[in-house]
Length: 568
Image (cartoon, rainbow, N blue to C red; front, side, top):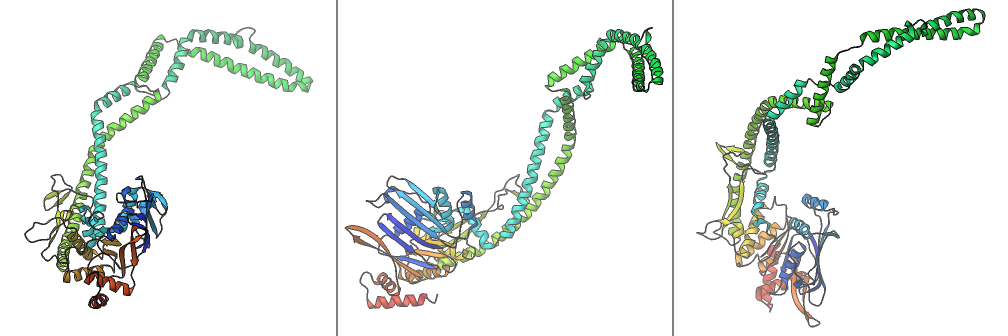
């Protein structure tokens, strides 16, 4: 609820604070007293466009602050959380306007943008007047209001889930088709590259093995000569190392037989003899296996050159080429499997479209049934509020598309985020006039009564906590005025209502009566606001009845109106 409104140096207002209560607050006052100034100040703190002309002359800054209590709104919490503003059950909106045209906004004492202030304000207050904040005139909100009236939340949730599932498989299909197109476009190149790489029969680490073998073949003569020389030195010559060590072993055996200290050296010499013997045998075997093969050498050099060229062509190492070969194999396999996978996804899409069409049809039927009830209720309300010949229509239309995702009775329709319906409220206030979109209704007072009728019909489901009506009594009197007052009173049991009126029948319904008046202070005009007690309230209502001069009969009639209002 709106708990208080503080205004300083705004237009004719020097400084004042208004404290509000739940239920119905009525604001009265003579024409020009400043009632519209209050609404203007409230609009400003809700994010309306500001003008430096509104700053009270002789001052440098205007301040408007609105305090809201018991605010429980997930949307507001989300908005404030995104802006890193503390969220509590109390929300304070403040707007400061300087004579230089600068405007500063605050939410819970944290600097804010005007856009955020307006977003929060639009959730907190629905202000029905001559200007803005008329959310019910926005066709985009009509679907939400009808759904709230019809309690369509389960059907809407089912539709959104089905649409999300359809979009997921459609996204998957698009991705697969994109891959298939890319593979198809590159198929010739893929085939060429794969054939080229397959023809080379690439093997891991082949470069190293080729280089090693080329080195051996190029040095075959040298290897043979050196191994021959080594064999001669080790074993084959008359004075070879082996024969010398063998002689040494014989001498050491004799020495060790006399002096045990030679035994360790004898064992070491025997070991050396074995090593020389093993090395001699390896050398003879190695020399016999040396390959003198110039054809093999030429073949290896040619292979090495091919590998170098292919690596340079693709800009990859040999291991990189093998990886590429595997990737190309996978692409070929993927192309073969894609068509089957695409067919499966398309079958899923067909089934999901059927599911979406079913839940969309169920949701639409429920909306249509509720629309008929809403039309009847609104027209009855409008008749009571002085528009007896009104025609109210909930227009539900659909967009036919040859490739639409929703199919109803053989016709395809476009699927929107909340169904396949397009919903807009139409109104004709006078006989013979064609119903037109609500936003095109011209009369401010007529709009307010239409809004009141709609709010009364939607009261049980409407989430807007605070409703403000300006000029709701334009062009009405007598029985219609009484009906408007009763409607406001009933609606105020579900929402906090603030209404400006000139009619005693409406004023008598107030839970809180606020009077606006002008006075002269220090040779300057000042707008003042007073919360009336019971006696002063009767006088204010009597003044609405009889004018400036209050009579006994007008006071008695005021008392009767107040007493009658208490039974509503």
